[in-house]
Each structure stands twice: as structure tokens, then as C-alpha cells.
Length: 452
Image (cartoon, rainbow, N blue to C red; front, side, top):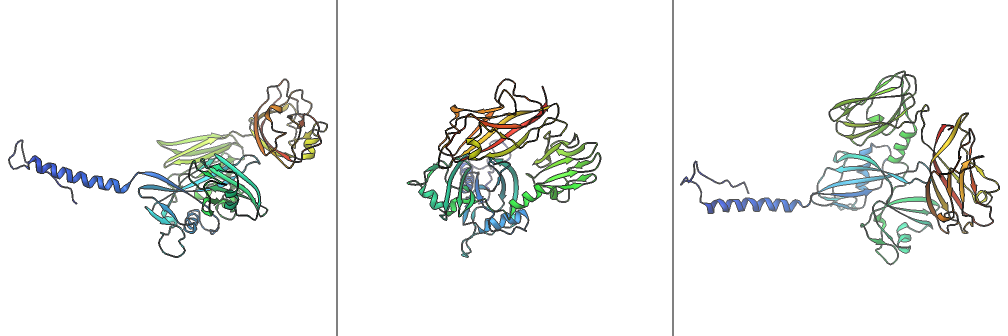
């Protein structure tokens, strides 16, 4: 129906104007049509669909890979009136104990309807790269982690349905060893719902496989491990995203141009570093113009495209001329743990140099339970020859003698004189023992500082 206008005449009490009754009839009709349109749209909300990159063409562009992955996914639906967002989770393990996930998320520009592989029935819409907009990348830490151990050749959903129940809360990660291969899944289920033996059953559709190393995951890893070097000034392009950009010239300028021929998508990021003298100058757009950051040689800089015409550029401060946080990961065998009091285990970090010492920041540890628990209750991390410990795990933590896998984290120990000049660090156990067959993974953050 077209809008119904009211003839109110040309002046007050104009006898040619419509009656109050006729005017109210038109108002009611207009509102009836407006409310019918609002009710047909529904709530404006976000509907998020996780997906897997397994089975797509690894040589295609990022958006083409995402479109293909969504087209081969089992049938999924975008509700009416919702902004449909699809999410790709990529595992990132900087050490053995820090399970983070990169979440790449995209908006689907098509409206409500069904998508995915319907077995050739022709009842779903097909997506192309032109139907997707990349919204960004963020790092997520799992809210819920469930490990099913070695399940042999059993399907993961069968193992979960027979296993101990768990509640789906937030980003839920399922891990298992399937047919001798470590597998990781994002669990797609109803929030705050119990799954497992005697509870809601799972199917293959609940498990988003994030193990594929041949698609976007491999491409991004390759970019991160194969930095691009430039000998002179550089204006970054979309090809520089998701990788390290190294400027080898003297006093180089790195420019982020928001008005490039091929715009850089929001959510893109890269690291930058200058390696020669003269430092590195970065110019970049902000909401009300532009800004410049000048950093020292070897400083690492993080550049993130937060919004249109807006970049966040931050120095991470790991120049060798400055104190910088470092991370080291290692493992202890059962034999090392059982004899670790008589024979402490030297940590394979070189001595820091004359006039230098180590300053601990944080220690993370995981007890990988075997078939028998250790009886020892104490573990110390210290510099060789120090009278005080840098980190200490003791009996109250119930960590060393745990009867199942267990994680723990601890900050620097407040002990007297933990510093020794230019010596390595070691792990010592509170006592030697005869039992226990598991292992312990350790990850430590530390600085190299001047001797106090």
C-alpha cells in the first residue's frame, strides 16, 4: 500500500479538510503497514556459524577458500533479519602449553536462506567470494577444553557420546588422538547444554575440524615464517598482510596508504622491523588524519587495521638494547623427574653474559600423567648456585603427584637472593623417587637484565 496522506486544508477549521474520523483511519492504516514490515524483519541480531577449511583448494585466494568451505559444509541456515557471520578458527601454539585460536570472521552479504551442500537438490544458495566481507581477526583462548585421549579408530562423535558429560560454554575445544593422529575440533552446539553419555547426543555436524594444514592455515603460517624484506622505502599492500615486513635499508620509511588501488581489508595485520641503522619510521592513517611512529633498529612493531581509515600501530619493545620478555619451552622425562634432586636438569638457555642475570616473570606447567603418579611434591626453577628459587611448585599445589593430567601456572617466587651473575638456570626436584612414569611440560617467560 502507498502512504496515505491527510488533507488538512489550508488554514485552521478549513471546511475542505478531511474529518477527524477519516484522518484517523488513514493513520491507523499507515501504522498497520509499518508494523507488518517490522514483524517480517524480526530481531536484528548476529547469527554466527563456525566452519572448517578441510577439503578446499589451497591455491585459491582467501575469500574464495572461505566461500568454497561454506558451499561444501553440511546445510546451514541464516535466519531472517540477522547479520550472518561465519568464523574460521586456526590453532596457534607458540609453545606447548598456550592453546590459542585465531578467529577469522566474515560477514555474508546474502540474506536469509539455506546454504551448503544439499546433495544436489538445488535448494541452497551458492556463495562466491563477492558475497563475503572480512570483518577481522582476533585471538581467542578456549573457554572449555575437553580431551578424550587416544580413541583409536572410533569417530570423535561416538567417543564423545560414550564419554563423561561436559557443558558447552563459550569457545569449546575437543581434542583426541584418532588413529594415532592428534586432532583438534571446535565444538558447535547449543550453549549451556550437556553433551556426553546419557545427555544430548552429538553428530558429525557438531565438530568443526580445524586440523587442515593445506589451506589458509598453511598459507598464513608460511607468511609468518617467510618474511618479506625491502631495501628501501615501502608502501605496504595487501600482499604484506599476515606476515613479517623487514626493512633492511638505512633510515627507511614504511607507509600505510588507506587509499591504495587495492584497499587493505579491515582486520588485516602485519609485523614490521628495521634491521639497519637509523631506525624505522612508520606513517599510518588514524580517524582524524595521519600519525607517525619512529622506532629504534630491531624494534618489533605490530600494525593492525582496526577500522576504515584507522590503524593501530604499537611498538612491542623487544629491541636487543632494551629489556625484553622472552619465552622458553621444554619438557622433563620421567627419569629426569625421579632423579631431579640429586641431578638437577640444566635448562638449555645460554648464560646471559657478563654483568647479566635472569629475571623470571611467569611459569606454566603441565603434568602429563602416565599410568603411575609421582610421589614427589616439589619442583624448583632457579639459577645454578642461587640460594633462592625463581619459581617454586610445592605440596599445596598437588601438581607433581597428580593422578591425572593437570596444568598449573605461577608467578615469580619472592625469595632472598635468587640472582647469580652469568650462569644458566636449572630445574631441581624436592626429592628423588622410584615411582611415576609421566612427564612434565614447562613454559617460562623471563627477562635478561643487568645484575642488581
